[in-house]
Image: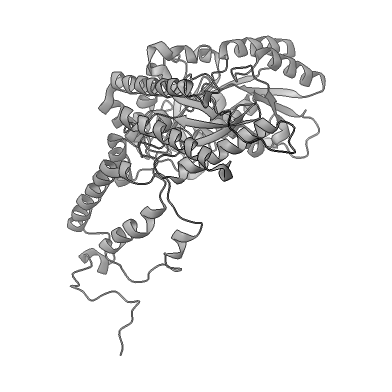
Amino acid sequence: MAADPNQPEPVGSPDLDAGQLGTGDMDVEAFRRHGHEVIDWIADYLDHVGERPVLPSVAPGDIARKLPDAPPRAPEPFADAMRDLDDVIMPGITHWNHPAFHAYFAITGSGPGILGEAIAAALNVNGMLWRTSPSATELEEVVVGWLRQLLGLPEAFRGVINDTASVSTLVALAAAREDAGLDVRDRGLTGRTDLPPLRIYTSEQAHSSVEKAAIILGLGRDGVRTIETDDAFRMDPKALAVAIEEDARFGFRPLAIVPTVGTTSTTSVDPVAAIADVRDRVSEDLGHPIWLHVDGAYGGMIALCEEHRWVLDGVERADSFVTNPHKWLFTPVDCSTLYVRDVETLTRAFSIVPEYLTTDDDDGVTDYMDWGVQLGRRFRALKLWLVLRYFGSDGLAERIRGHVEQARSVAAWVEQHDDLEVVADVVMSTVCFRAVPDWVLEVEDEDDPREAGLDRLNRALLARINASGEAFLSHTVLDGRYVLRLATGNLRTTDERLEATCALIGRELAALRSDGADR
């Protein structure tokens, strides 16, 4: 009978591990051998990531077409998968660990964090209950407490680690809905005639996660009212007060306010203390609480530096606060810390304990499954613990301080360039700028032909920078203007590499002047 190509290779094949032909796991010796190979692969990748193009030059579907349509029935050598990792997967990777990755918010998956991720995967615990892994629960409590101290947050705050700030914000706003005493937990929102329409207030510069949370919580996008900002793109407390009072007159129930410490586009810092004043006054006038949730997903970490701790002024008066170690604390994605003042309100919103999850553990233990949406919970605290221990608080602060200085050096270079301008204050480690040369071609049939021409020019400039593979920047729109964003924050971004990126921007702008068709 002819050999069936879908059956396992014969026992003794040099290409398969012994464990692949039985019914168990990879055998220990094979794991040790492949593990060393994988660590060497990771080390080589991190050592040479700066030599790769930041953005892959692939088209949609290119990667998928190189992969089989169906999974293998027979065992395949691990070496074959590693070869396909290099040949098929890596050509489609955008390298977030690249020293010239300056889009969105520059992040770093640091060495200790990567190793912590590997150990957590090996332990494979589910931290839903204290009993399901006491160390996972208690380490999480300790680590979020450490971070709380480093940021100068009040002792009343207790923390939990979620995957992303989108989920942390969703969880916080669910607690806000519970705190309003609307009996939504049991009765829901559908079909109820006894509830007024609910409102959440946030800046026009806020992250989209606030709107997403409103959608999921049944408030809809109409349940979010955006508040105008000042000339530094910060929420205007006076406009906030007017909006809340106006909504209350028309029958809306103000539910929560979400200011931002480090807005997504410009890293502006909303005046949390003044916003808390508005919340307190209006809550008293209306006779019901308004939840204050502060989004510091990116910007909160700058408070590790004493000279920048002012960004959290007023946060001590908030009901909840989120900041992400995976953004500016060198912890691999994903890791988001949510702090709440009143844990009982949070757990009242989410706690459901079926019989199969009941325990006779002491009432004082923490069961993190009651703190949010997830039942199954990864051991994220382990990688954050290793990062905090490896770098130390002084080392972390010094690195963040250096990234701020790098951003300021880029801003200084922009200001000295004849054809560029800084568009927003450089508060943290992100620079918003655009090209404004005299030689820009105006766009006909536009209300403002020069501004239309500048927008087209800056779009072309960004496309050329990113297509080069030498750097990756992102964009935003501020006051109707198309603006480029350059974020620092990667541990591997040296000053010399940053200077090379600035030189690239200058070269591509000069090339656009020479190539009038692209303008």
